[in-house]
Length: 257
Length: 257
DNA sequence: CTTGGCGCTTGATAAATGTCAAGCAGAAAC
DNA sequence: GTTTCTGCTTGACATTTATCAAGCGCCAAG
Image (cartoon, each protein chain N blue to C red):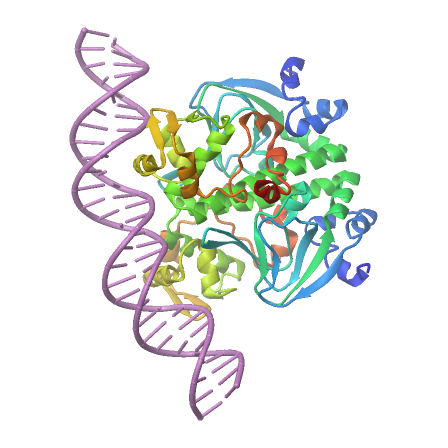
């Protein structure tokens, strides 16, 4: 069943699709369809072959991985995000699992349609390259965060990043359960609790999913955020894709001025 | 000074360049030049703006990062490898530093030449997309390795990967100093020593840079290698690029058979 | 040949993090 | 309204990893 125009239009002007002319866009959307999933649905398991590019239009998705009896969370996606782009471009198996955290709407775009339109339209292909480059840079920041900071520093920087994304207010709402945040930051739930406690003397207070800040300067002195690791962009810029949010040219200079 | 044909020819049939026809290749190489650096030369620092794609033709390069007073190694490159591809495609600043470990020959390809040739030739652009996808997948494996395994498990898996790359012999040669390996694996040099000691009862012996294996089955039982984290490809396939080495479609099935 | 420097190993100790258990609060199910 | 379940916090203890120091061996410089 061909995709309804209204569903495809939801991504017409987001991320790398905005660089496609109408014929390229229609070629890319050939065979695409919208699917709705309840919460806690496994969309993909590690090692699965991948035939679709997934575009999260509503809800939340957790990308994860496991080994022996350990699991971890590699990313938590919010609308509008694409995922499994690298595996689709390379026609490879998935290296991550994907599970819905909330009830979600996902646009499934056939891999072959995307690859064909990239090979046919160099400008569109270049835009997808930029998106892949942005995804790569996001992962470089993530591994730097893990290798260079301890667990309290990772939490402190996470909170400052969320605060930037949620409008620089004195209170934010954690976008998911704390055990998911613990897995994302690479620690056990018990240690996330202890890390929040450590931050209480930097003015951080917690009430369920609500986190308050009363001494941002002290928190920043501990966190030492760096534009080379942390990416403080506003949340409503998420739909612009990783190519946009990860470009940041000259950002060291911007920070200094 | 234009690049000598003989220098450009060194990359004519490697990695994504092999997908370029002659005119696209010449456009990509427009303004390229070969440079030789002694060991321990800083090629790039984190935050530097990037104007060239670097291609390591000979020697070794360490990609690293620091924060506060901590440093880590993110990758160690062997010939023939490209690096800083994502920053060039996205026209962004470098998120990693690059330093030669040995005396090295590096081909510098202007970023604008590469981007122009990608935009002009969709097939070549697609090949660069595949390379970026491969680089991304390599980083996914790396972060999974760090988040899911302890330091002894990371060393054990590193050794098995090196053994696969060096021809499945009973002895390998570590390709760089142990303190660099320690930084790559995310531990201090003292802990690398202790991890090697822990592996001695799995048949691992060390004599300088030489590592011997006398009980590979025992080592594999501890290491539990997984094709979803580890990439056992032969070293002479390195010149084929990350798109090739990271594709691995259906590899779970291959491993089982 | 001698001296100095560097890489590495080992020991002792400190810090960070994980594991296990218990209890509380709130929400969901009955 | 009651019961059950889940997420989270806190305590106690174990394990992993880092830090600091000392010493050895080898290589480079003089």
